[in-house]
Length: 181
Length: 232
Figure 1 (cartoon, one colour):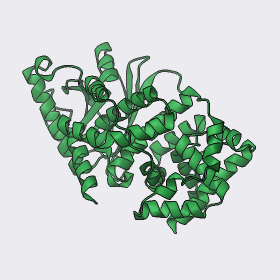
Figure 2 (spheres, one colour; figure 1 turned 90 degrees about the horizontal axis):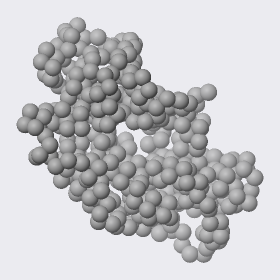
Figure 3 (cartoon, one colour; figure 1 turned 30 degrees about the horizontal axis):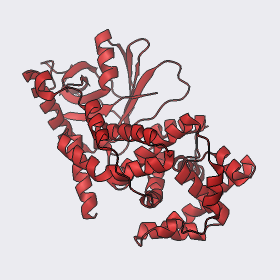
């Protein structure tokens, strides 16, 4: 466990005991990552701020439930935030900017995974995604980064819903085999 | 139908984390997660594996007032002026004990909305360190009832009982009942005030007490579990 994670685990443990100062430090050290993800997913700062509030309230109340199987503390907190963002997206039934989706698909600029650093976990995911069929990769990335539903993915990719569902499922299955190998 | 084999569980877990599992299917999956440690582990596997996606997203510092709003929501009253001396002691006791218990037992609480419920309520599942469910608790706002179902794995102890406490927002514990064991179910009626407080704080704790419950009206044994109820 690296120093950052050790520090975050300590802050979480102290937060679970009701230590507000530790919770404030935890917020200070992690909120930019969680908020950045929320802004990216929701593309609406008001909603992102609401979700951020809910996320840290949940973190405070459930800090004692964190354990190593959940990943690092930041993995755990990002997951809490991400599911809340997805809930907000579903409630909003947001209007997808499909032009933007196409530009994401067709852009020559390095994708997020090309920017991933050399850390093994990241590298592994990056390598596996690179090896994926382009259609699998695109559906998984759009679902993860944009929170697209099956219907939105189908619309964005101009494919029947059934085909899209199969693509997601097969893509994730191939990805898992690669990640687990 | 519940997912019953590895490949299907994996597929559902991955779609849950990615977000394409949605609507009623997502709710059902969350319900299954409550019952299946294996399914939860598969979700955690995917959360860990896909976490590098998050690392590639730009960090954005939230507005400063957001922290103030979080603090106001979590700690709405100034501590010194609103917590009486005795209550302060209770708060200290509970936080201290809960912290120790959490460190010692690493209790895992998993919660999830239940599907197809028409009345408003809250739910929690208390689990052991081995991710084994111990009690399932449902509180109904409609009729002010609290139902506690013990899983068969909760053994009866000849000399002691598990006592359930409602933790007020101030941290003060209020005894609710002695918990059932070995698969038994117990339903109690909450007073209007207890129901109101429970829906406000959502906090419950379980302590180990002498047979029949704490003789003092305050917890005397170790706090084994501390949990939050959530909406379903």
